[in-house]
Length: 495
Image (cartoon, rainbow, N blue to C red; front, side, top):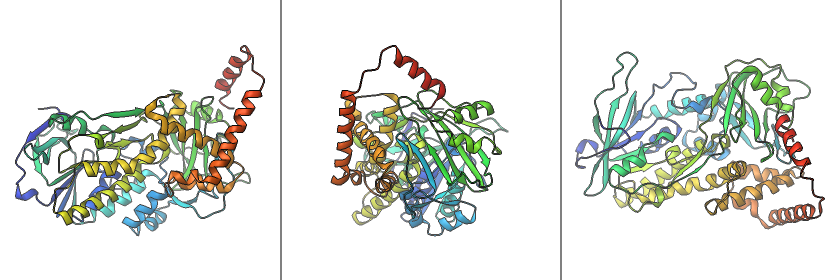
């Protein structure tokens, strides 16, 4: 059988059974939210998912990163609340923790501890499994949406004359009992959305249709995670936080760690190392890595806490942007969104928010087409989806470029943003107003331009000038001393 990454077959687009059907590839967060919005425009929406979906909240095979900290940004939370008004209460009833980023999250950044910043910036702190399960329940409750589990999409079906996608070829995956995959079956549709994640075959499917190769940009800081669940210990007199973030300081220290509360009175603890300095998967190594962070707070919190899960490791964390919006030609009836189009290092928590915003952009596109009586999909939609992800891409890759030391004309915006943010956070250590402003931009509630208002930009410029003067007149360190200091940093993991 033809390989699933290259198959594309021509079929007529006038099948009456497909006129009001949409197909979504992948039933993760991006696919679920896309299906939810498509249900308002099509008579039936099929979700085609490779894996079995659990009947209760929990991680699943198709989302290996689900074992790690998943913080939904405030912009994403507000978008989900608009789509599902009762979602927040359902999550809280299931044990999700209301978390105030101004008051209850203690953050040690490159320049030191961020200050308490008041109160009122509250998000849900929950596992990815619970959040996705609650969203899936609501999407599948819509009578027009059905899910087809245990099937994989092996290729697109299209009509070359109008350059239009008309459906997909699917086959049942090999089961544990039979060990044999099923034969491919064609499912016609008026619109196909690829939300299959990082492993999307969309670039090769488009090539099989005779379209140009898709340009990709990859920023890989060689980041790895190790994560574990702990029972939350009884509150002690020294712990004044609900969640803890300890960042490294590249290039000297590339190790970080986080603790966030989730349902079941548990902590999810994730340790992160960049540049191939991966946190270990054994008990002693996990604790030793935590002890090597720049401050001892995280290690002290878990040293005597009770683990309630094994240690999980994950290392596929590269940022990957597929420039579908640059294509000279694009077939009608097809769209790619979510991680299939732009995937981020999961540590920045942007993926689910971008998925929600992409679903909103898709809905707006379909409403506009309803007035124009045109075929959905096309370059206009891909460009709108690319615009949704652009700011998040610059924010995320700036940090990872700093950790890799990569330079180049292609990344100048991200590098400039990261240098500016480093200086800004240096000011935020002593200024709660600047810290609040940064959090609102990080959570995508305000645009990055909010960091560049004249009063803030002037202070950042003054700090940069002051540092330049200090470096100019500082005594030079001897060549023999520096390697010993650097070795000490790498050995102790703190600086």
